[in-house]
Length: 156
Image (tube, rainbow, N blue to C red):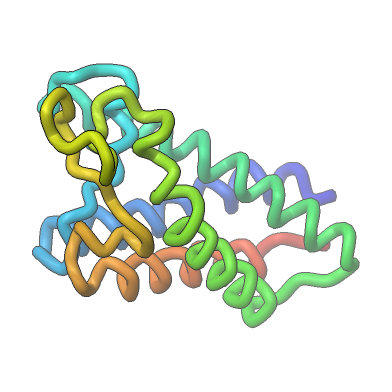
């Protein structure tokens, strides 16, 4: 397996994914703020949540990059197109499983059942639809970019 590539390109791919997501949020294309969502796992202070949220997201990005690198090694090939396909699947899983599951484990995120009484963040819902109509497109684009980078740069 390409260990050096995993470390290096996992970081690069995660940086690009994070930049796309944060840029889209700042550009008002989505209301989903990943650094704040993840950072409020460890602090209730919204202003201080962004930095730990970015660190958490980079750790998660490295873990997923390890899965990509392992998959490329297992099938014996990689490439831009294969990486993009992996990224699309990854994005769909994030929107249908990972993000909708956050209210189950997140101490400061409301759920569809409990409401906002003790929460800091609203629930994302399936496909993160509570964060705006363009959230699906932005999230899929960011994950396809992530996969494309890993597929194009990792050696199987």
